[in-house]
Length: 633
Image (cartoon, rainbow, N blue to C red; front, side, top):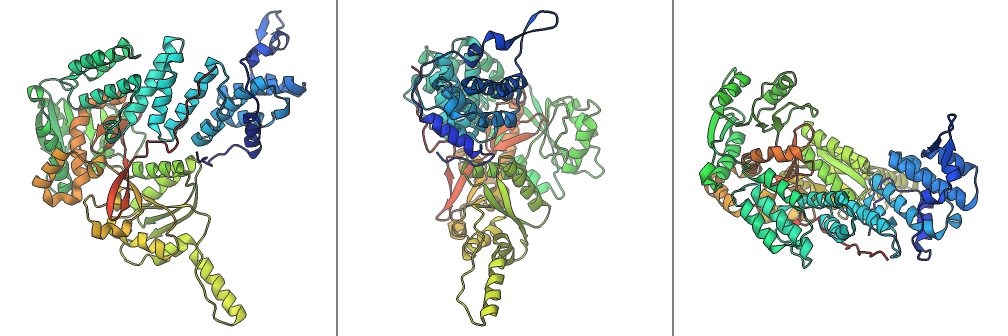
């Protein structure tokens, strides 16, 4: 497996681990705590009472006063305690001081495991897997801990099925209910994060794993229609009577999802029916009502009431109170960012919002935590951050950025760069381009440092006094390009990269490069470009897609806003679950939706690549290398 180079452990530590990996198999022995003598660990206080010293500083002091194997035991203990304290850098420093030749064979697994944990804490999950012990002779406790690190590392890299398989495999080894419950929660968290397009196709010959997959599909259906949930759960219990999930887990699922849509609900939708936002509001309304009419819960479908927010000199809170007085149990809107900024500040010092309110945009203050106010929209920063995450996962750690002039381009550049550097990547070059003109050559040359190559050529010609054959040489210290652009600009920029000797560099982008409609002749120029987009555009719901194409053909440019309307209808009833569990996701048409601590909804998108002018979905959740399961002896 490729090792991600961000925050890499020092070379000498890697050499140490390689040395340890080559050591012979071992039999389980006492822990370091057991081997450190009572005379060392227990000290006598001034009051004459025995006290156990369990600080890393104490063991570092003991190590400085010792030699040989005992010294190494103290260093290992100090490193473990520093790691548990959360002082990862110091733990790593202690680990590097350990001398391989002075370590007993019985300590090798302990060292390798700690090194892997440090790599994982340093946002380097691929290296964590590489550093894990490969031997089969270990204690059950070591085996469980190694497997947990492997699962966490695969989960961090987005290889969700590898994480799930590993945790299902180790589940029988847990000795107490609390450990098993934590493992089940981790399995459920990974299942929640799986895109529906992946989950719907997964099957397993492992009865336990298949039970988990079936349970996840049942609950995902209940997010939109919980009417048959209890019947489906009873059928599931019949089909998987020996499944390790206990009754408490199942009961909690039933409580969370049964009757998430109660009877006599009223939804007030507050949108601008006129003015500059009319077209956007019309697309959202179309998606919202399409979801409503496609909802087959005939017995308790809600009443929908629309209110116009485009009225001149509107007092939004007065309109909101009127909607609540009219019986609204939920409010959708507003859409205007100016209004959202105002009401988010207002609600921080009052309790104006008496019912759950789903604003369809975001306030400028990301830390706003107004009670009952949720913010949901197609946030471009979310997409830029996910581009950074995928690039790092694919070992692209030196980036060039090219974005359009203006606030939108700056927002995407900032979001990408912050997340990319946080994960250990380095932005080598960053440029803006003018998207009002068709010639992007100057910006690309500056990004690729081609001007430096041109100047060297001119200087050499001047020095020699003769014409020289010349091929420009781009900078070689980048391994990817992050591009933010519209379809029109992207169709000009991607071929220009190839013209300027950067055709071998992978180009990553956001959904904005794709029109949302198939246009192979125009999109041939985008071949090779990788981008994230909403499930609605890449996969879609056949029934709702047909509705959109039939009734709103003139709104092709607003197709993603239509999907926002669809999700706005359904996500209302899942807000409580999304707020209750950090791992919870709503599988929507705009992505896998989750809520952060500030009641802002975010979307986990799908990935696609242009091939022969067509945007084709690619599955990034499957590990290219399956992790072998090691059994303990």
